[in-house]
Picture 1 (cartoon, rainbow, N blue to C red):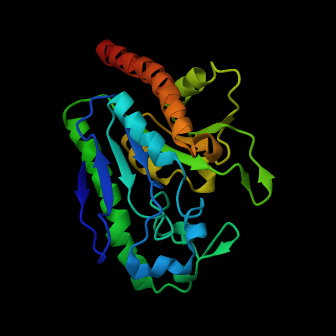
Picture 2 (picture 1 turned 90 degrees about the vertical axis):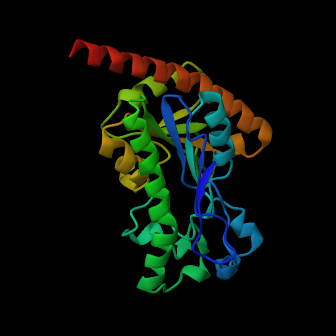
Picture 3 (picture 1 turned 135 degrees about the vertical axis):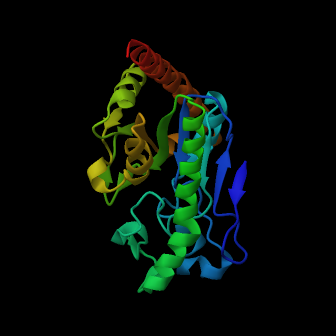
Length: 266
């Protein structure tokens, strides 16, 4: 696992790359993997209960992504700090890249941030994370390794009083090479309530990483959201990782097989 050093005193490294040389046909990303906030920030004025909530991280997402990285022999790029410092899955120029209010909770440490502080967080966390993902994808392209890109997230069972019935959701935009295969593979389970561009869609601003590194490079790509009550505990994380490894495996096998045939026919 390779890491880049943090620019904040007392902080852990700014991001992590796991299984860098994995030969599986997908690169995994987990932008909301951690709720860590360095001591310098005094928890942004929040208590421990709030930092354990979804506002600070995607509960269970990293545990699933880490298991999936092993099962698929896939590289994984993960965040090591809370999205409350800066959301790595947002355009840093967007107002919600650093939120002063999340769901029903004010974030005191993010109120009235000076432009210089916003830029410091961008340089400290956002830029190294995306540079690391770029470097990894460049390495695979140079080696001509087949590569799809998938971002792993989790979502709350309800949001501001609205129940979310889906067990998981698949999010995609115009390029459906991967998403159609994943929908077919996951859809074999008749008991799975699978959201299609639910509970979020690309228009909600959640597609930044996949749009930048997946669509921007012409890679097959998608986002996966799993409802947090499915993966909050170790047993659920293991079940979902096994399910996804099976279904992702089927989807990737068909995807890369078709790509090879297309290249041979040219």
